[in-house]
Image (cartoon, rainbow, N blue to C red; front, side, top):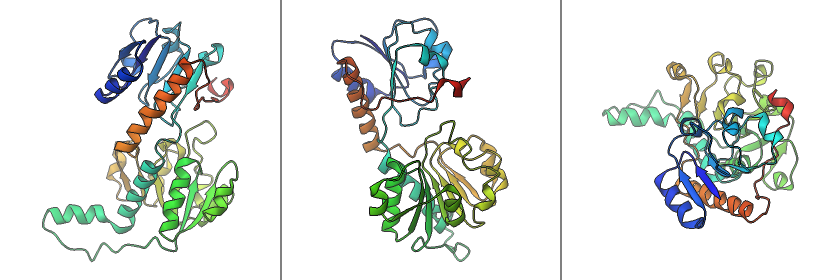
Length: 308
């Protein structure tokens, strides 16, 4: 088969080339929209989050029968054409649980103990710290929105800090009770959380889950740590809320001027171990498809009407 990989690094090229012998492989460093300039006969494509899968892109791939994204999120795949073709789509769900959860707590500890300020000062020879009084996590209530792989990993870490855990999810699982997670409606999470951590994928139903209607429920001193997509929180709230907000991604660079807003590049997933899992799971999904099986991470994308 003709298989094209987009947004690839050298280690990915070496890995997939060694594992998919007998197939015609094509590798591109750029996202698909920057690489696909004409119709191609690729039967399988593998992309990352920078590749926007649109109807225009799919129309240039008449022989495409399998689309893979090497990410857990799939909000970059939005097109009606998927529902007109007999096409399998998969992601790599679960690869980044430890990486993202640990990164969320690194942001949280920076926010609660102001270590980013202290480190910057100490590099300049300034050892003043009396204006950097922090707060402890022990005994605080953490509200986790979304209790999938990442959310559950956050809960495990929170339990180690001695925190109380309230969680919002579509379904209840036995593991919630084992971890001491109080399974409650969204309103109770927002009203009770001292720390709020969204851990949801971006879908039409989760976009702006936190919005100006329910934002008044959030405690004034609640710290919001967002390692999910920034669109989970209504855009205007990033400016209007006085809460400390730390985010793994930012769509508006001007927010960096706000003293209560911290952000990093989209790097929560970026660990040696998570990158290895991406390649391993992507390869497994692809081999299953090539063997005539349904990939283990086959997606049931949102219904067509949500993209009309």
